[in-house]
Image (cartoon, rainbow, N blue to C red; front, side, top):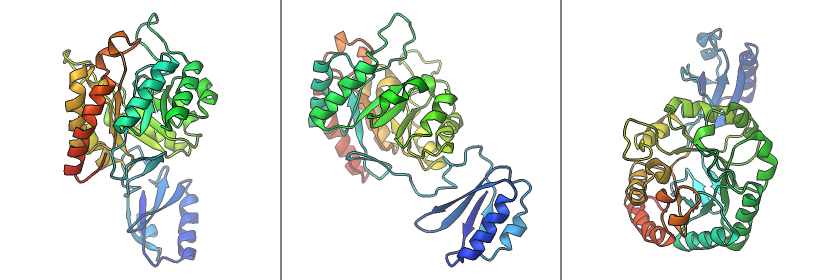
Length: 336
């Protein structure tokens, strides 16, 4: 249930209303927007009489919300959530670009790529330390050592780092990581999501390869229900009957998510396609449909990458792509 308060609502009337709602075992929180103040009522509201609520002199209007996600719902939070990480701003009209290799392989590799993508205009560095792989025989990442190498690259370039977590047990290792990524395979690892919800740190939540938009928002709800509202949604392609590409980029998910939720939405064109030459057109498509950012895989030697070399572009390709993204963003009255 959402209750819109009158602009001149008295604190005493609001307090009385809040106590009445809480007496029905509902949780009440206040959201102050640019144009109005809302009371977000979460819980079983079926036994709350809307006429009694409207009788309170502080109330402008009341409406029930049917969607199971409440905190991620734009109806509860009309204004866009803006998440700042270093110099990058997600959800504020700019389009930050996260770039870096699929896996951290060595100090030389990650520092070289970090310096190259920063020079080209990237605002965050990505790199996998823990790698969930389909085959148990594939490279699984350098784990804790990989995080240390990412921190060295951050020290060398100043770029905030983004890396993926796979288990709640690994959370202490991520204390100095700027953005914790939840990969597609862990989108419904609810115990992990709940633990991440207890942190005061941005969480980049990727859509599962066979999950619906509502399921993605419900996973965001798991994080937000524990208190952490710094969630960045990521569309990274879904599995369809098409086999030419690794996945199928659901471009329509971006405007749909932005209509349903106030959370920023970014796009991963690398995992969506699995093909190097498709990264550029899909990146441009993401900006055109309103994405709040991009996460792109960049490797200095894709042919010899230990993971996902086929979808990684080179630093030179990335440097050529960034001006094109900037031109399109400008045409869309935004900025990369």
